[in-house]
Image 1 (tube, helix red, strand yellow):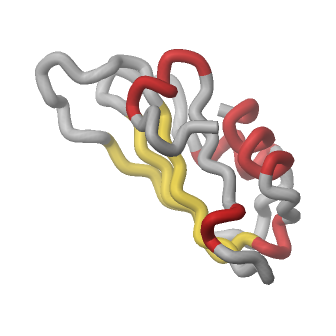
Image 2 (cartoon, rainbow, N blue to C red; image 1 turned 120 degrees about the vertical axis):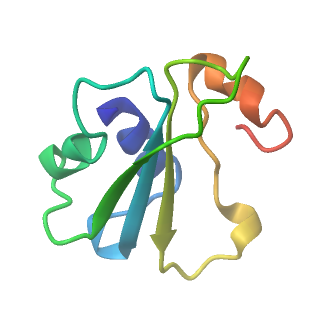
Image 3 (tube, rainbow, N blue to C red; image 1 turned 60 degrees about the vertical axis):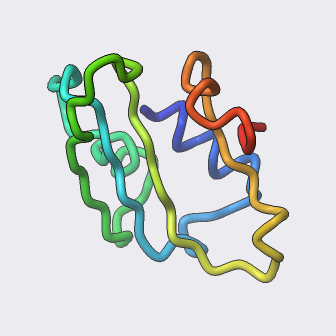
Length: 97
């Protein structure tokens, strides 16, 4: 999870001061810890974070964590990089970078 958060922050040249909030989801097969814990360990101390479980759809890609970060930056939306790691690229080949 820390890898995903770090990649999103680095690829988009963000600091925690840019982040308004982050919404995490994970597939129902992931139960060891809350995904937001990784963000807290990376310094997201005053950023609102929330976690939810994805709908258990038959045939869906297993072991996936997603995040949607709400950020305030002075860049157009088309410059934001959407990060998909490893097999998760298959979820959105149209925007994965």
